[in-house]
Length: 421
Image (cartoon, helix red, strand yellow):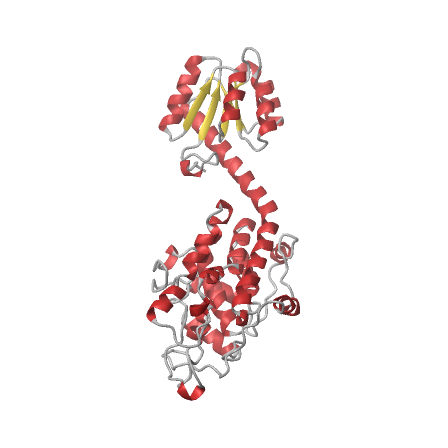
């Protein structure tokens, strides 16, 4: 794996490398080789200067000779690892001190170079050390941040539901469905976590939509519809302020894109749409179609399945629709997955969904937004599956946001296109 210089954990555009050696010629060679490969080398001629330099600035990797006057490289490595346990350290040794280098590896060194070494060997070892450190960092991030992000996401999803009570357990359901689809696709645990939380938070941007638009009792104007569609961009902006949420923010931004490029906000098409966004788009539509809404009961399962399949290849990624069929059966129930996948999905890392009764009880203390006084109606829309005179179920699903409320009484209602955001 080659190292992408843009992935520096030190906060700099280029990964910073601290080079420590008592031979000026060696330091000069190291500097030259690293600079031309996009790294930012800093050189020190002794261990004490290296400790002082390290304390003042962050580094992504350290290369240190073992035998130096005063403090040796092994002692230097121990001192630096006390300050930054996950720091990748490459030790440099001569042929006669290989045993000492092996000791350094046992004590935490990431890699070893034996003099004389070539430029290719140096760069390969540095990239290997950086990649290994990145993988350890991501593993720790998944292990320790996953439960925290889960809890935060579930709390925020409750806030979303509080503003639009008709969604009920929709956000939680999306998290579970999306995670299972990611598992079937063979994605690793961190990617599954990212997609699961993306499902929880896919509509978090509705928090930034004004009540006048979000709860408007009537058809939205073009400008109001434009504001409603901003919820995906608002949601991404809320999440991307922290680097740990960057991938989740991309999913939230693009969960309304379409396979044929006619979605929003960026009109991405095909594989340009992030995989998590494509997964959530399918789970979102099916969940919405098969859930009760204030203006209609849940649609029949056979109708929802027919709509989902009819729009594979246009609105939805056909491969993802096929994966969804491996996760959910014709009766709308979760299929049993491979035992190894089920074991992971049921681990403590995943925060289970709360019961409907618990959610209802928590929302009961919030201001109640009563249902519309009259039943909502929708206009006929052309669809290859819908029976004549019936609405298109996928359009009816709204992929997460449905607002169809008569402005006055039912007798004043003029059929028009369903307001979908």
